[in-house]
Image 1 (cartoon, rainbow, N blue to C red):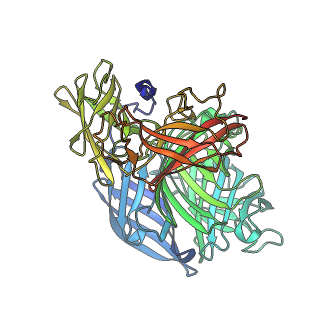
Image 2 (cartoon, one colour):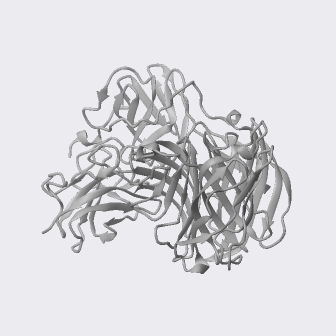
Image 3 (tube, rainbow, N blue to C red):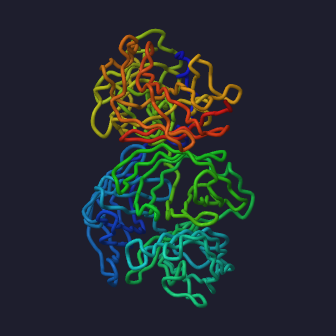
Length: 613
């Protein structure tokens, strides 16, 4: 294995437009919001709360709120108070206050919404928070005109016994009427099967203050527990009418409804092609497992990568996962590799996802995504959204001690330089960097890109990175840090497609030379964390006594467990992790997903070719 494997192709997540970085001043003025929160005890939900109303941000770290709250089956009560917030460069935001039951919301500030979840609150809280800017002018029914995709995740009566999930299209006529009457979705108490119901007439009313009502009357022979979506939903409409959020204000009717304006026609997979922030709430009915997440998303060309920070019933987890999708001409379509659907807004600026699948599923889910805000700066500038695991390139995924990191930005100089010997130097091409104050070995420098190794001494939940070019010091960037967060190198050098896997004779595993069932192959990674014996980052790994990974590791190929015979640093190379794994004997020929899991992280972004023995 040569160092050439670590040459990473440029990922375009660098900022465009005028110079700016996100800060508290980026979040100011009034936002309408919806927040649903479930408190669990084991696999049982003990309390469900839904809050909605208006948040007013002062631009310097404080906010007030005025609204209502539903608790269990009680009628709504008034909700007022204040809290604090902090917006980091890049858009990562923390919200605190009694509004969120005393926990902090791990939020993301995008260009059209503020989204988040209380992922850091503890194992028993699961939620979804969405806030959208409140218009300064007056709106009317004409503000909602044309096709929209509506998705909902609701918990009638609280808890998950009667949870329901919908995804369907409506066409607003601009005067309060809707053309369609078909509502499609699934409900746990209805057998988790895909169902289409007739609900007519669906109507809406938009008030000048951008609040409104979207009403679903009781259908023929339907009841509160048999109809997929029922009654009036209080909605908040975006300033340009291109999307809305909302949900019921009726006692016991918890949940969130979102709508995004669909394409009139002409959408393709390329219509979802950018970097986004999102947040989501999910319930797996087959496992009785709740999960909520805050995520970074990179979509394009039929594949979407999620870098999720997820709170599950069984703990906190980071994952970089990939899914394929197939958009129809109106911008909506199924995920083709996993259950669920995605709806992309006609502007391409927002999306929603739903657990609703082609025949039904046990997965009940709603997420809402908004474009990342552009970031730029003068001098030596590190893009806060462009500090990535050098193998997976997953946006928002944590970096790790001992792992390769690729950073994008500007002002890094005009030359290209690659470390030619071990250990990697602390300065290369006039460029140096620190991670949490410790000098980081530099592997490669390009005019807009730096690849370095995180010192093993880096600890904590975040890492502060500073780059120096000559005597000019960059901005400080803070990114997530985890003990382990695996990423697998790919042959395309962008984290997708076929993994960087070798036969025992060092020939590349690919379609022309597939791995065989029962064969042991070599998989190359970054982000596996601490090793024994300890090795200096950037120095050649020992051969006589190889350094092995401390983190408990599992590998699956095509969903089947794969036996690991070596898990450590590649002998003779620097900071390159290697897994020797046995191809399961019963795998059929074809391209199979290759997944690696540690106690803190998971990735399944690449595949491996398997042939016939």
